Amino acid sequence: RLGVTPGDRVAIASGNDLAFVTTYLGALWAGAVAVPLNPQVPSSVIADELARVEARVLVCGAAGAAHLGLPGAVAHDALAPGAAMPLEVERDDDEVAVLLYTSGTAGMPKAAMLTHGNLAANIGQVLGDPGLALRAGDRTLGVLPFFHVFGLNVVLGVAFTAAAAVVTVEPFDAARTIAAVREHGVTVVAAVPLMYDLFMAVADAPADAFAGVRLAVSGAAA
Image (cartoon, rainbow, N blue to C red; front, side, top):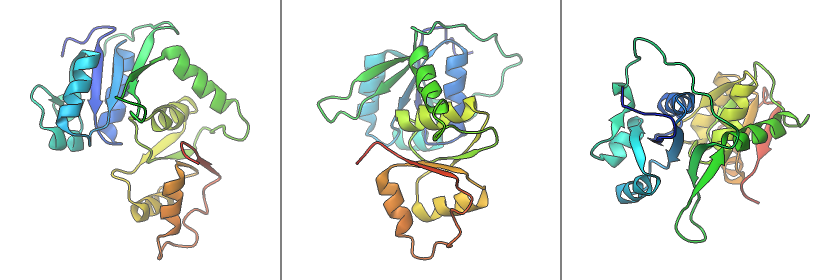
């Protein structure tokens, strides 16, 4: 109903929540190119990033909409289900699936082009490693930002392909995350070193909080 056609850019400014996940999967289903954005950067930066990728539409989750207040943005809650789901659009491996902005540590952030083949290869590499492979029924911690490839593909993509679940925590807080791990029976934790340091610093954390975790992965920093 928003007029999105195959190849259009669908930008997403949202935290790790249902709004992000459904918009991301919906964009890929429709043959569009998903453009995940950091919802916490200044609105002027978002506006520049939208212009550079020529986004057809920007969908905001609750946090993104409140922070940005951009004219022309579509709030996720306004996107009620349609009467019928359109047929999935087939895409080739070499077609772009995601435009993912870099951190900009070596200059202005650039929108890196990730194809469907790129994403599938990354997922296949993880699931093909006996030490990293997820199992159907696993519950993965979804606390890494979904606008970063670690959270987007190594957490979301890998989990959904393996028929696992993702337990999201938004925003990140070490104590709340530990409680979520215990409450929801998280079996796989993917995090960066700083997050593990913050977990260790929670003084009143239950000793058995991570007892159900069978696999903990660290990356993206030394």
